[in-house]
Amino acid sequence: MTTPSGRPGAPSDDPVVDLRGHDLNLLVVFAVLMRERNVTRTAEQLHMSQAAVSAALGRLRKLFADPLFVRAPGGMTPTARARRLQVPVRRGLDSLKIAIAGEPGFDPAQGGAVFRLGMSDDLEALLLPGLIGQVTAASPDSSVFCLQANRMTVGGLLESGQVEVGVSAAAAWGPEIHSRTLLTSRYAVLYDPRALDRTGPLTRAEYVSLPHVMISADGTRGIVDDVLDSDDQTRHRIASTAHFAMVPLLLASTPAVATMPRHAAEVFATQLGLEVCEPPIDLPQFTVSALWHRSSAEDPRVRWLLGQLTALATRLAPPAP
Image 1 (cartoon, rainbow, N blue to C red):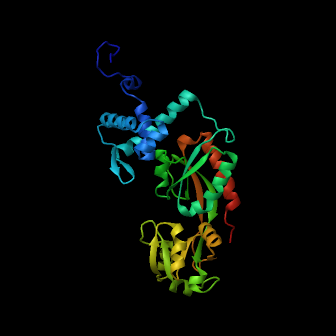
Image 2: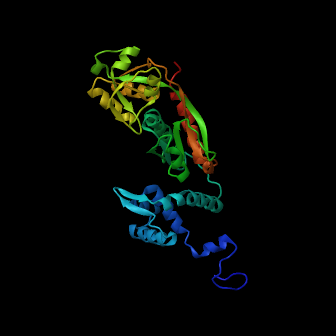
Image 3: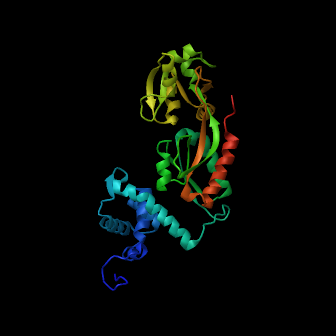
């Protein structure tokens, strides 16, 4: 490289000129590897051979002087360096795409898209069946892929571009994350009437004395424990799971109760013949929001998907007590 002063090899004052020595196609491979975490799937997405993807990964490792990905069961795990690169690379590629092709358009009836969402399985139970039906009816060539997420992890998925839209209970989102309230929900008690040999609501004494199946991401405690602690009461937790969908299976095998968001409890009760009742303790209501990153706010696919989610939530939102 020659500078305006004619000295070869000296760095330029223009960072764009400094890019001439790099193959920007490598960044496309990196972005897809970060999303797929698998060489084979990356090759399929980019219509490349596995050997070509492996060669590109080798060049990326040399460029950044870092392994970037290490082998793990079922694929690869990104290094800390790769995670730091993920957001700026993704945003840079999105900006280049718009600069080259212009602002994207989306006609759902004429074209397809892969919509990637992040949400927990209680919200999947409420929203995903209807969303798939709406999206595929309006856009037959489109697909809906859902990644497991909660309010602690959904922001990172949006930042990295692994999902375009997240759905989560309200939390403190940073300035880069936009949100729209979809619905207000509350908690409910769920149990199997065959296992408990009863139906109907529970008194507080019955609720506290029965065994509990807890839903907790870390297996430590839940909101029920906080409420009972304030009244110097405790509950007997016989099991804990991180997945709402496991609760009906656990309740069918033991006489116990579970406390979960009502929107999921109603789905499980309807599908599996379980009993839903109001908690005999004071538990707060909460809002569920759709989330998207600031960088995708003008993406017509994202705007269209948000419209679909809003319409669906309006139709499915649990009624007020």
